[in-house]
Length: 88
Image (cartoon, rainbow, N blue to C red):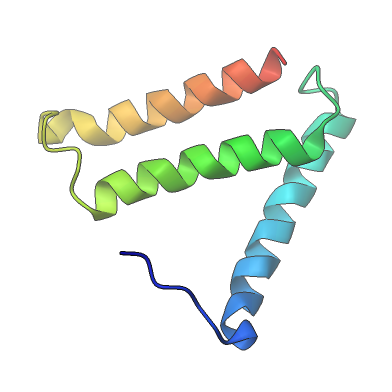
């Protein structure tokens, strides 16, 4: 089960990291890297995908793939989601 963080002080680093990420996505939108101008949805989609990949690794849910291929597969998957976002 997931644990929630009740103390808002603990969230400061997470909020700062997320803000930096959203600002980076906004810079990509401004540079017309993405067709869409919906920065919030693009950032959320990429953020969710990245967290999903990290969770799979942390919880060792990648065992069905050969160990020597796992990192490359995760990178290719993230590259694919970025390419999909470029088309939106």
